[in-house]
Image (cartoon, rainbow, N blue to C red; front, side, top):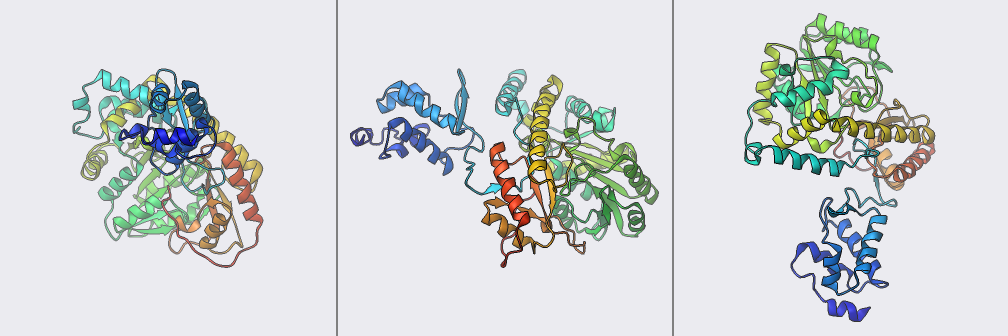
Length: 476
């Protein structure tokens, strides 16, 4: 073995695709196993990134001077460990999130759609991107595009929103590079510094950041398991400095509550009577087979409906659909989007429109739904006290008596968990509610999620520990 690696020396040379082979030198054991271990180390340390293509097996065998079957065994071992994926004719690629270690710190903070059952997101993205580039002129596609989406993209957006908003005129819709850009544009165009938004006591951290950027105060409104208490919302909306109301009515972030139809009608009636704007942030409704009607259908003249694809398909698409009130408000918002984000990424917008038009988006959504329901069922079995509908990709776990949010994070770290506690979502002056949001889609494998939820169940039974530390990071 030593003689082989000595003769191998640095055959990888300066070719980046072969450089990871140097890591196999001096590793004990069979050559195929040393190669698999070297590949794992290169991925873990960031030398190889998700999506990187590995050199062909025959080329590696020739470079090392070993049998082709030795390299085949090495690649097979890497595939069995979940490090790589590939098919005949395409090659072998580093898998996304392949560095997730069952014994490492499991991230339950990032609210991602789970890996779709029965659908290869990577293959779908490659095939669609290739088709988009073959159909159109790449130079035109990669140039500046005026407006918030083409008519064809807006037709696709109308089809996607139809289960929630019914039939909409495509010309009315806007395409934005993500919900955060859309939200910031709404605040820029329809609020003034010094005004305030009425929000849930625990609300989306991105809204908190955008409101701070635009000089807006946030006023928490009391809620129950249906959302805003109507009498309190009516009282707060009567305030002179209230610009609007912001809410996540379906699978609320972070508490996962769902506002029923009767309460939606109450909220719509109140904002219309008060003459304030309603910002309906709706990333989760399409996870439901039969979603409730959006509030924008109940208060169309006052409501902005924002529906990102980040929670239903993939955050990497950076695409959100916006249904503004008709008329002058729609034109103002289009101008604000152009001023803040200029345009959505043309390639991603074309991919999304193609997926919706060809039915691929529905197939991908169905795969996400299947996996989401399976993971929610696991959470219900392991943490029956956690709250959230069967379709949710996150749940809320109340943890009374477990001390400060910093204590909760510290307890989670001691059990191998990365947690996000209530302080990341809390609005100033809102009543304290100790607890954590548990994102079910982050772990790549169900087995990792089960282990994490089991550890969290132990944490929920534990007594409050001494000490504190840590601060919340990026939360979506």
